[in-house]
Image (tube, rainbow, N blue to C red; front, side):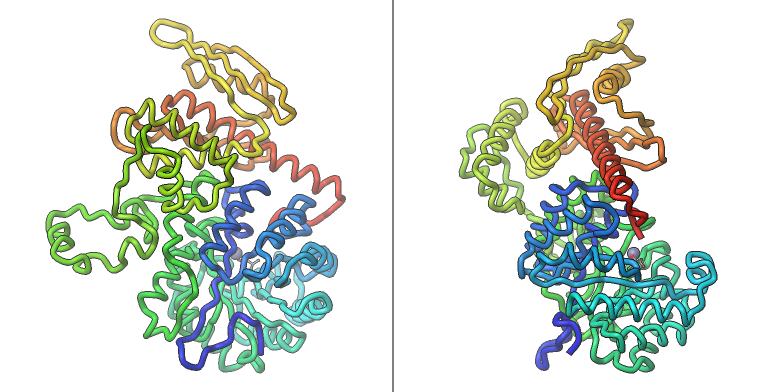
Length: 535
Ligand code: KIV
Ligand code: ZN
């Protein structure tokens, strides 16, 4: 009974379904918008992780999102459920159902607000009864198209228990197979959120026949703890994102909640089917595609997560790893070995190392490009580390389907010279443009020259550079953050041996993202849709 994902095996512990929303809620992180190709790269990696559900997008928001949900559904085949988000509005549901027609295992995720704050302000004084009726009607409508319908009671974390229970009971009666209890604003504390889930388990008729999902935000830094409290008290699905991306302070980080369930399987009587050895690679991939760095002290996937600095700790780990390490690095895909490639490493060695790092089945034509870039790097740098390979692969991904591509940069600068930059850029139609500008420094001159060609108005908000590995010959990785005239933020990244080139690549990458989003907004306006970009 209920969603196919939540059936309990009588011998094993409870299966907790992992619902990934990196491509929907995660994309709502400022600056994290992804193009259709990037979403497919992440989809393939989520399949390697073996997630149970992928929330692919909000199809009514734009024709681009609609198409992207279709492409993701086709890519997933029958490997996982593909969910599309809607408001509790018939038109949203019709459009979502149409996008999911190609899905082998479609799910419509619909819902409406339940808290006094949402009813009063967002829904302009709608009564609870009206919201319940609208929610139940939406579920009934969605069930005409698909057998699997998830209902979210938005801002459930701040709703009175009885109101929430009434809404859930009504939508279950209307045919919901999954009920999602989001702490939309990240307001809750774990003990109370757990108690809320327990109350619902005990007071909502029919809840035992459906899957109970939790979707927690990290505004107080407790999203993972909230999700675990939900699991402890009866939830059998957790909604989460890679690296904890998401609206404002983000969502529950998948790598954290899955490893916590794994470490505490007995107390929780729960397990997931996630292939945890893919975490490190997935984290890097998502960071590289979105341009959002992972803080070094981030649990499970941060650069320092397995670094022991104190002498006493180092001594303890040498005696026995478990003295200071609760997770074996290899369990989350962090390899202890430092394999260094050189220009003499052949095709096979490079392919093998890339596969070990998670870049499986690179098509031959793409591999040739990667190999050429690798040789160029190895010639100048002599030793190529894993981090260099991640950076190189990130650069390849960013170049694929780019609107503008930076082909050449020439800079003259120094004291007392006037900084001058000449750049050559190829546009998506294959036309080559060259421009030259002066500036207060080399980056200013280069960005002015790029602006002369691309002509996309923006403000540069942030510019930072870091070395990818140790050593004076390390690759330099630049991250920039730009804002368009509507106040939307876009992040760009670029890496190269020459940091002026990395700077140019990063800026062009940010401009590509901004233009892609502006095109999607224009498509939305043209299609006459009054739907917002996000919920
Ligand atoms: O945070 C939230 O409530 C959401 C819903 C749309 C599920 O993201
Ligand atoms: Zn959310």
